[in-house]
Length: 466
Image (tube, rainbow, N blue to C red; front, top):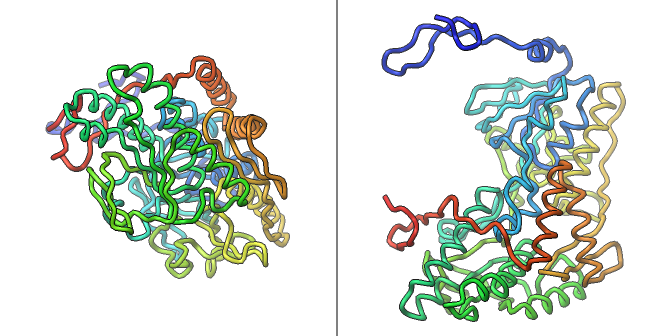
């Protein structure tokens, strides 16, 4: 029996109704890739660092294979804008295959790595095993709950597009849920939004939710008092944006307070469930929504325990990003712990600029390695820090200079737009930002994938229950 493209279909299992004896017909591109005799570079993770390595080695004397459990790159600094309905998921996501399609020496497999066997130079995944000559780990990070099991179970996270869409659906559902509540206490619980962690993510998310209260909730949910909505930002430190200067922290705090965000400093969330949280001072706060932005830790894969720094949850690497004890394995970005003199004795911050710079530097070193030259040590160039707190409010630090206001806000937008992967992403983000600025509205307020909590005892209208 002939298939739709002229190939011979194999025998079918009568129970599964699937072909059993089909031999794939390789394309010319696959045949060319398979025939490459260059050293095999296996890149695990397509974040900022991984993508820099893949793009840097395109057309170079290496046979590159990218593995990632997703089929797209995610621009994480703007995830909070997807979560607060300012941007669509496709504005900050970019398919890997669109990037690597024109690269003859690069291939991609959507796979989740389960174990690394360094002795055999093999990576085991859920879709099979892959061998390598050089392994690059650009694994990124995951949420760090610091041993708080209650929050690990009940709090929402913001590390992926799917999690951002969950938050977007959740706050929209809570608005609709509050509309049908008969008692004010129940309404308040629906409209209390708690963000744990006053770093850039927590501050930016708090500011975005505060603007939603001022615009969307006030003008489109007119049957309900918008003042019932609370945005509470909690942090155990004595100031917001702890890694910024005191001047920038104070300015960010003022911006948050001007927007009506309640900032609780010097407090920790010690427990809670889907209806309330408890703090270290013994107080409690009724809320259905807790978003955890208090910290991250490096992602680790079984098989390389000898190189793991347990306290930091990162791989120990030297100044060339080589794993301690594994000369052909490199770790980049959030998962790499590199001590750099007196400036960074405890490792670099887990931010995108470090990952991007390390990825570019590794490409240069791999080219030197191919030429038989000595690899050069990495030096991090701190280009500054920035955070935005709503419309026309931001704080920026570049070297010894720190400033805020409209200029900082415009600079923040320019930097983030230019860091997006594709021209299409840049145009979509600019268009959405322009429309939001003119209309004062978060435009993508669709509940297309309702968020269902783990605790089924808490009913949610408009959500199908099994």
